[in-house]
Length: 548
Ligand code: G4P
Image (cartoon, rainbow, N blue to C red):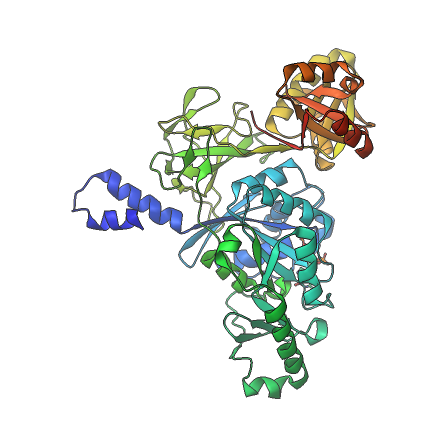
């Protein structure tokens, strides 16, 4: 606000800097950067497609046929791209709606679920949780929500598939509250379900949105009836309306009213009911995202918090994707802009390498065109071609050196030990794993007391990717085998002597160093981990570690 009025007050020809800061503030205010979190099959792809429809990026959605057979190991978005022939640059999608710039980041929920999925959530300002209303809260949703909780990311909830027989809506809210430990504030309420799904009642606007199935187009307007007591409703659905009135009374009494501050603090989630495939309820979600979800927020760096409206450019790398274009064997580093204005060709400092780099070629992710965008602001994601000189967590800035924090590595859930068929390739194996580890493709643990290297991942597909990349990029034919390890925790201890005792104890046999040289405890079972934690109360066992 201040920046805007400053600009208005500045006389013509005033310093370019003042004008630029006004421009930056305006651009930041109109940006929304979010990710969709869901369990496989809840409807993320379908909803993504419908959101693209609103942006005008695609004209007609239509059910993507045969998606199942083709989606193994590829991102859903690539599938959409294939099916639609549109430019969905794999995992980031930018579109404009109602004079806002929306950046939608893909968080794979399928076989390609990986550490990326988690880290992408560190680059968003809000998240949309999609739940299959017939199934309720599922496992991967719980995992992803826990990651959002680390930064108190505001969450919107979409209860999908109301055109099917679903679970009782009140029970669904109850489950979200008890399992995910987040307060629910229903904003729309369903009228019936499955064959008798009539639409939703908007609790804040006292309006009924009538459902008609099979809406392929975004400009489809659903009929709105004002007021729950409107006599037309009784004529149309006498039975359902009585039921609705009872439920609304119950909901008003039993649930929380929407509270913007509680939402922004990540304590409460506004809940919408609808049917993505029928495009029903999608507009309400998009509007809520623009009206309620936060614009880019300040980001913590080691020295201070960085405001998105600061003029000097800054940002961090949260994901590295290899082989986006198999013909070029390229790697793209995904950078989230945190402040200032990015301009193609600008010079920025690469903090870790302590070097100035000129960013002349950059990939941007407009949904509606392939045109190169020349500028970006806080909240936007830009893709930097990477020739092995960028790692996850790297910070880039103009002027002041800023190292952003909060880009974590997560304790893996799956483990493999690695052997190679040809012992002469041991050097290549180590080099390959070192680089893939730095890239964040997999976590590599080297047991302190020797033995095979151990790989850790949060999704099993990571191992397949690593095996094929070792083969193709490093010429190493590696064999991955199951291990007795069930979980890993990074360890730290203020008291060096206790740590040394810990290393020398029997627990020391389970210690390993990760690719960055941090000490980790590889537990063989949940019981083993608990007992070790109990035996060594001064040692802290961390389930995440930040990029060093
Ligand atoms: P995902 O990305 O979260 O895995 O889910 P996706 O959108 O692929 O949806 C999973 C399945 O649920 C798809 O059916 C999709 O058509 C269906 N679906 C999505 N939204 C709705 C909805 O609102 N109502 C109903 N009834 N179904 C919905 P599929 O049979 O797996 O694939 P397809 O052959 O239909 O493409």
